Amino acid sequence: MNVDFDLGVKLSYRLIGMDNLTNLFTVIKEIHAETGLYPECITLGDQKFKYDKTDSLAVQKGELSENNYLQKHSL
Image 1 (cartoon, rainbow, N blue to C red):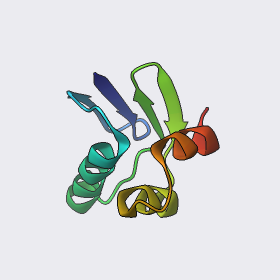
Image 2 (cartoon, rainbow, N blue to C red; image 1 turned 90 degrees about the vertical axis):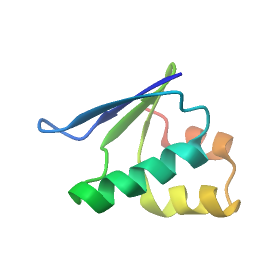
Image 3 (cartoon, rainbow, N blue to C red; image 1 turned 120 degrees about the horizontal axis):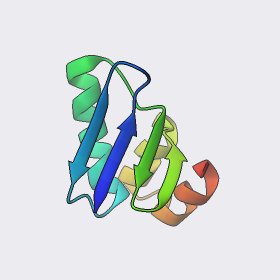
């Protein structure tokens, strides 16, 4: 599955092989560590959604389901 990040006009990432939000949020944390940036918009397959740091951490901790995250932040 392809993943596109829209980080504004300067950076864009295309990741191939992402199959769930937990793995995706781990990559986003690494990108943030390297660039200091978070994505404004993410396209995962046919779903487009906003990034929310607090809720992404909740997903990684198992406190929020991936489906609930997508419903809450869908564009």
